[in-house]
Every structure is written in structure tokens, then in C-alpha cells.
Image 1 (spheres, helix red, strand yellow):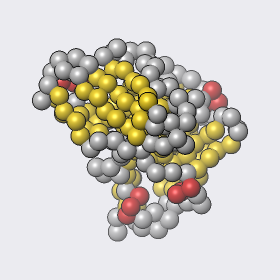
Image 2 (cartoon, one colour):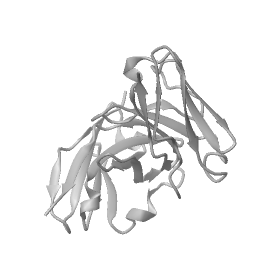
Image 3 (cartoon, rainbow over the protein chains, first blue to last red):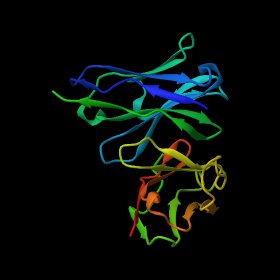
Image 4 (cartoon, rainbow over the protein chains, first blue to last red):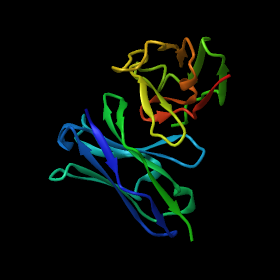
Length: 117
Length: 105
């Protein structure tokens, strides 16, 4: 059984960056394809990007291209999502989720990122 | 890619059946058998309920079923229970629907 445990809530000022972590247990990160999905307050789910096992590359939603970086530390089985140039519209809960053949089967508990001056 | 279209809300009484629709285009829902559905209770992470249009992960009650016709996918919940009250999202990777709030009356 895969378990994903994310880092705690963050408060950032506009223009800053945030880095959210997602620790994997039950499997190794190399056995999984990790993606990130966010949810603004009272809004729906929005896919940000993740590792595409078919291409062997990390892909990003066009909306976040140039502002988001997703990395992995396989020595600690931890995935990271860094979002830069934060603005108020980036206030959201950020989820890591494992991807398998076009669906997301396991989800982290979410990390609230608040962007406020 | 535009978000998939779902009704904002649906409701039903305990024991009844409800169906939530998810409409896309021939480029997403209609073009592939890869629609998935997620249940989300307030303050909780989404949970996979249906994948590949109609398959249920282990542990999901068989009261939950999925189907697709043309560019519209559907999630049907039969024998409604109080704990089914939640938000439901469809997904045709990587696009999600806007979500549907299910109220159990």
C-alpha cells in the first residue's frame, strides 16, 4: 500500500517561491510516477504536471510552464514541487498523487499554501 | 484544454440512485476509455472511485458504477447512503471536471 505524506502548510508573500515535499512509503519513488494537482479554495481540481513514464520525462501543464519545477530525491523517496513568482491566485491546497495509466490512484493529504502580503 | 462539464449539484434520498454526468469532446472523454472519477469529502484528499470508465479499485463498493456514451461519461451511485455525500470529480487525463456536489437528503 502506497502512503504519501506531505509537508506542512506554508504562508508566502507575493513574488516568493514555495517548495512542497511528498514522502513516499510502502513503495520506492522509482516504482511510481508522481504528479501534482492543486485546488483553490472552493474550486475544483487542477492538474499541474508530473512524471510521464511513457516518455521518461517530467511534463508540466502549459499554465505553469516556466514557474513550476518537479523533482525527486530517490535516496529519501521524496518528491518535490516548487512554484515560483507566487501570486494570490496560487493560494490553494497542493496534492501529490501517484499516476498509473491515466488515473491517480494514491493521494497525499494536501498542503495549504497561502499567498498573502 | 477546457475543463470537463459536470452539473454543479445533484441530490437524492437514502436508498435511491443518482447519476452524475461528465461531458467533454471527442478529443478527451469521447476519444479514449480513460475516464476516472474521484470522491472528495470536505477537508480531505480526493479518493479514486472509478478508472478506465467503469473499473472499480479494490475496496470501492459495487454501488458505484461508471459508463460512457459518446462524449459523456457517467457515474451512478445506487442505494445512496449518508456517507456518499461529497464532491465528485471526473477526469479525462489530465483534465478534470468542475466537480459535482452530491447531497443526500
